Length: 96
Image (tube, rainbow, N blue to C red; front, side):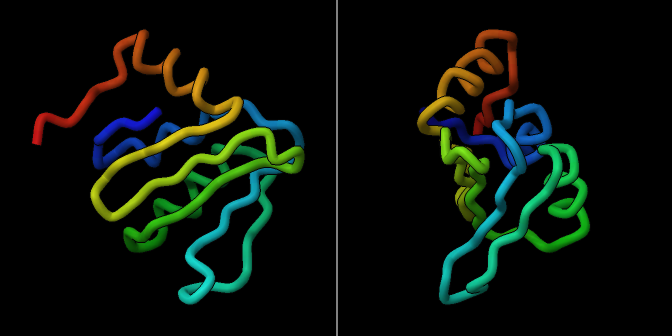
């Protein structure tokens, strides 16, 4: 499931986690990943950086969320239901 919205990366603060949030990037750009205690912590870190593609999962690898340079947030695994619920509740879809 995917959605186009330039601010959708901020929604990851509410993703349900099994353990820590693991943030990682394209390996050729940054070979290391980073562990956070919550999705809110991930969003706080991303807010202090420039825009780039990223991937997010949890310790159980129960989902994969991606956000790309075209402003698409994609969710697979357990996060697909999370994103679907956000959209049903009225999360905004970009019109551009």
